[in-house]
Image (tube, rainbow, N blue to C red; front, side, top):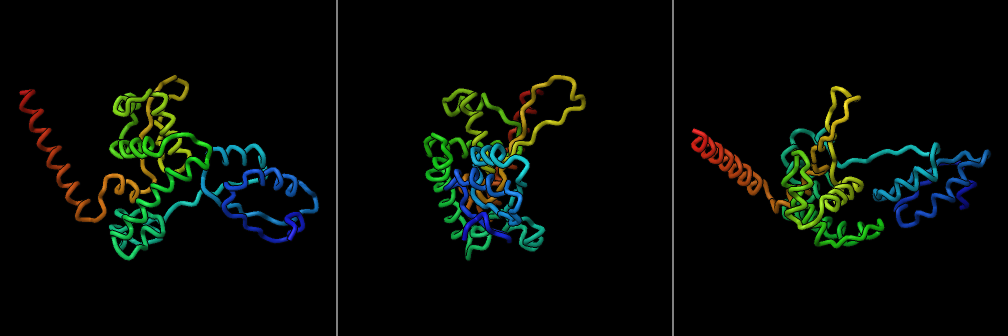
Length: 234
């Protein structure tokens, strides 16, 4: 079937594999007699988003599809959702071990195949190390100098790594709120993993027992550190 003669909905999947198709679609949708619609699916890529915005400006609507949320899974599954995350194959796996194995495979494939396909030149090992270190900043204010020193790279490089993970919808940056937008201020965003399952995989926490043990240990460590600081300051 010729795309230009369609009168109903046409679904195009894995669009990131043929980005040149966007120029063709622009010609088609600009034809006065065209009455069809296109549903374009594919992996998120900063370059793809940019090309779509430039090529199909005013002709396209972006819909961000998220993983499962507790509104979909129900509160009864909240514990599993928190441990495994919202990716369907991870959440619906037969066991925690199967879920963990799937997520490990996803992380490896994302780093070794998807990122290079996006035209991003960076070693999978370096990005895995950065991603793991970033897990310790989940819910905290971004500190480019600290993480750059730990990796032995410049602040600019660390920031570019963060932008890559943000642009591929792995990380969310929550920008600071300003009471006076006219006043020039420079503040760092807070960093959040979009999927808790990937966060726990990078922490190497495959089961709820591992997760609860880490939380308990962290709470004990925090209390001990606070007591130690109080003794030093007395």
